Image (cartoon, rainbow, N blue to C red):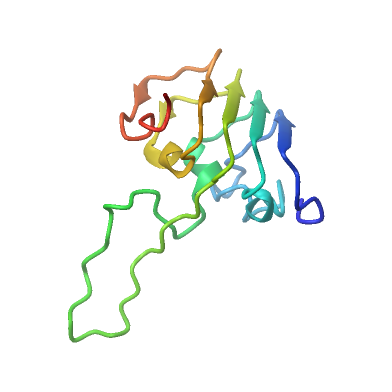
Length: 137
Protein backbone atom coordinates (compact mmCIF):
# COMPACT_ATOMS: atom_id res chain seq x y z
CA UNK A 1 0.00 0.00 0.00
CA UNK A 2 2.98 2.34 0.42
CA UNK A 3 2.79 3.53 -3.23
CA UNK A 4 -0.73 4.80 -2.45
CA UNK A 5 0.42 7.34 0.12
CA UNK A 6 -2.74 9.44 -0.12
CA UNK A 7 -5.16 6.48 0.15
CA UNK A 8 -8.28 7.65 1.99
CA UNK A 9 -10.49 4.53 1.91
CA UNK A 10 -9.45 0.91 2.35
CA UNK A 11 -11.71 -2.13 2.01
CA UNK A 12 -10.62 -5.66 2.91
CA UNK A 13 -12.83 -8.71 2.50
CA UNK A 14 -12.35 -12.17 3.97
CA UNK A 15 -8.87 -11.64 5.41
CA UNK A 16 -7.49 -13.44 8.43
CA UNK A 17 -6.00 -10.41 10.14
CA UNK A 18 -4.37 -12.54 12.78
CA UNK A 19 -2.75 -14.87 10.21
CA UNK A 20 -1.14 -18.06 11.37
CA UNK A 21 1.59 -16.17 13.19
CA UNK A 22 -0.77 -14.04 15.34
CA UNK A 23 1.22 -10.94 14.38
CA UNK A 24 -0.27 -7.58 13.35
CA UNK A 25 -1.23 -7.49 9.70
CA UNK A 26 1.49 -5.08 8.61
CA UNK A 27 4.21 -7.43 9.92
CA UNK A 28 3.08 -10.31 7.76
CA UNK A 29 2.33 -10.60 4.08
CA UNK A 30 -1.31 -9.57 4.25
CA UNK A 31 -1.23 -5.79 3.95
CA UNK A 32 2.20 -4.31 3.48
CA UNK A 33 2.40 -0.55 3.85
CA UNK A 34 -0.64 -0.09 6.06
CA UNK A 35 1.44 1.91 8.54
CA UNK A 36 2.55 4.24 5.76
CA UNK A 37 -1.01 5.13 4.70
CA UNK A 38 -2.49 5.36 8.21
CA UNK A 39 -2.02 9.14 8.35
CA UNK A 40 -4.40 9.63 5.39
CA UNK A 41 -6.98 6.87 5.89
CA UNK A 42 -10.42 8.32 6.57
CA UNK A 43 -12.45 5.14 6.18
CA UNK A 44 -11.62 1.47 6.70
CA UNK A 45 -14.11 -1.24 5.77
CA UNK A 46 -13.38 -4.83 6.88
CA UNK A 47 -15.89 -7.48 5.80
CA UNK A 48 -15.75 -11.08 7.05
CA UNK A 49 -12.28 -10.50 8.48
CA UNK A 50 -11.00 -12.47 11.45
CA UNK A 51 -8.76 -10.93 14.11
CA UNK A 52 -8.73 -8.18 16.72
CA UNK A 53 -8.79 -4.40 16.56
CA UNK A 54 -5.39 -4.21 18.20
CA UNK A 55 -3.96 -6.28 15.32
CA UNK A 56 -4.95 -3.41 13.06
CA UNK A 57 -3.90 -0.45 15.15
CA UNK A 58 -0.99 -1.60 17.34
CA UNK A 59 2.32 -2.83 15.96
CA UNK A 60 4.31 -5.66 17.49
CA UNK A 61 6.12 -4.46 20.60
CA UNK A 62 4.01 -1.30 20.89
CA UNK A 63 1.41 -0.41 23.46
CA UNK A 64 -1.94 1.28 22.88
CA UNK A 65 -2.28 2.23 26.52
CA UNK A 66 -0.57 5.53 27.29
CA UNK A 67 -0.72 4.64 31.00
CA UNK A 68 0.95 1.28 30.39
CA UNK A 69 4.59 2.03 31.09
CA UNK A 70 6.86 -0.86 31.94
CA UNK A 71 8.80 0.06 35.07
CA UNK A 72 11.05 -2.99 35.30
CA UNK A 73 14.15 -0.88 34.67
CA UNK A 74 15.96 1.01 37.36
CA UNK A 75 17.74 4.32 37.50
CA UNK A 76 21.03 2.38 37.34
CA UNK A 77 20.07 0.51 34.17
CA UNK A 78 20.40 2.84 31.20
CA UNK A 79 19.78 0.01 28.70
CA UNK A 80 16.10 -0.22 29.67
CA UNK A 81 13.79 0.65 26.79
CA UNK A 82 10.04 0.67 27.58
CA UNK A 83 7.53 -0.32 24.92
CA UNK A 84 7.00 2.53 22.48
CA UNK A 85 3.50 3.92 22.12
CA UNK A 86 1.64 2.94 19.01
CA UNK A 87 1.19 5.62 16.36
CA UNK A 88 -2.21 7.25 16.06
CA UNK A 89 -4.54 7.06 13.10
CA UNK A 90 -5.27 10.80 12.99
CA UNK A 91 -7.76 10.97 10.10
CA UNK A 92 -9.74 7.74 10.55
CA UNK A 93 -13.38 8.70 11.02
CA UNK A 94 -15.21 5.53 10.02
CA UNK A 95 -14.42 1.91 10.85
CA UNK A 96 -16.61 -0.94 9.67
CA UNK A 97 -15.95 -4.49 10.89
CA UNK A 98 -18.97 -6.46 9.69
CA UNK A 99 -19.53 -10.22 9.72
CA UNK A 100 -16.21 -11.16 11.29
CA UNK A 101 -15.22 -12.99 14.39
CA UNK A 102 -14.71 -9.95 16.62
CA UNK A 103 -15.47 -10.74 20.27
CA UNK A 104 -13.93 -7.72 21.99
CA UNK A 105 -13.65 -3.98 21.45
CA UNK A 106 -10.36 -3.12 23.12
CA UNK A 107 -8.60 0.10 24.10
CA UNK A 108 -6.72 0.28 20.78
CA UNK A 109 -9.58 2.43 19.44
CA UNK A 110 -8.05 5.26 21.50
CA UNK A 111 -5.46 5.47 18.72
CA UNK A 112 -8.21 6.82 16.45
CA UNK A 113 -9.02 10.20 18.03
CA UNK A 114 -11.35 11.33 15.20
CA UNK A 115 -13.33 8.10 14.93
CA UNK A 116 -17.03 8.94 14.81
CA UNK A 117 -18.60 5.89 13.19
CA UNK A 118 -18.02 2.31 14.36
CA UNK A 119 -20.02 -0.49 12.74
CA UNK A 120 -19.67 -3.91 14.39
CA UNK A 121 -22.74 -5.68 13.00
CA UNK A 122 -22.80 -9.48 12.76
CA UNK A 123 -19.91 -10.09 15.16
CA UNK A 124 -19.93 -11.86 18.49
CA UNK A 125 -18.86 -8.89 20.60
CA UNK A 126 -18.94 -9.94 24.25
CA UNK A 127 -16.80 -7.26 25.87
CA UNK A 128 -16.31 -3.53 25.22
CA UNK A 129 -13.48 -1.66 26.91
CA UNK A 130 -14.89 1.76 27.91
CA UNK A 131 -11.46 3.36 27.34
CA UNK A 132 -11.62 2.29 23.72
CA UNK A 133 -14.97 3.88 22.99
CA UNK A 134 -14.36 7.28 24.59
CA UNK A 135 -13.35 8.72 21.23
CA UNK A 136 -16.84 8.11 19.82
CA UNK A 137 -19.26 10.97 20.19
